[in-house]
Length: 78
Image 1 (cartoon, helix red, strand yellow):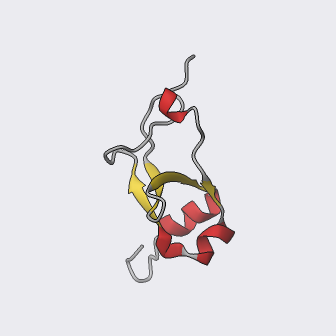
Image 2: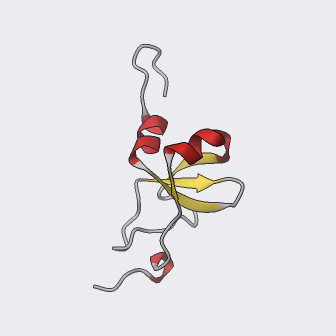
Image 3: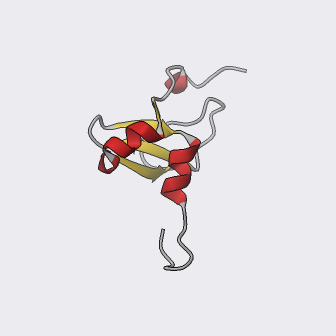
């Protein structure tokens, strides 16, 4: 199986420690956003991180991803 050439370089992984220093620097985008990278198998990510300062797509660790996608049922907000 051949990897997508766009993904031969891995995406920078943002840890919770890095995220908490400057959370406004990052956002979660749809994997179908223009110019979003595909996974190594050529499929679209459902969600992908984006670094607003470096203007590049990144990966979040599982803990950061959970924090960004947590749904507060008591207030009906994300």
